[in-house]
Amino acid sequence: MSDTYIIEVSSEAAGIVVRDKSGFRFFAATHRFNPMDGRLFKNARDAERAATRCLAGRLNLEQEPAAV
Image (tube, rainbow, N blue to C red; front, side, top):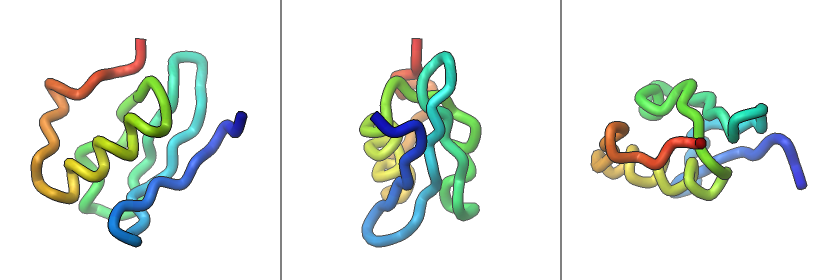
């Protein structure tokens, strides 16, 4: 299993996620995804889903599942 993934949404680079002890940490590629920068996710797929919602303007970080 890889330790780093590139996250793209609608052919736009959103950022990367890097595995650490607690899950996958997101690093934004552009200012559009800054609300997610530094956020920890359980897996790369959760980060991708959040990036899709972020781009659509529907991201609510208080309701996002965080890594445990």
